[in-house]
Length: 68
Image (cartoon, rainbow, N blue to C red):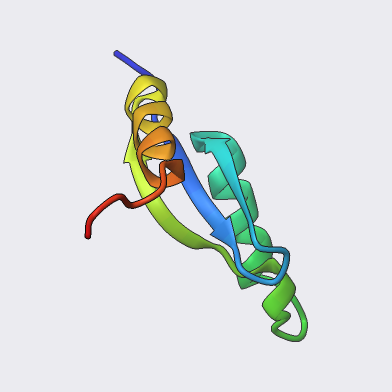
């Protein structure tokens, strides 16, 4: 069984990061248990899948849009 990975955007830093399942759950747990909500730690989930699927999706969103 392939491990699940998560591709997330951190809007405050404008970066995209990939987490394995354990790291993703840790980050979400951390967000939920902050004393005061902090927008810097919020993640936007972009994709969930195997490592290969996440890499393909990341490559797809990085290519410029050539539609006229």
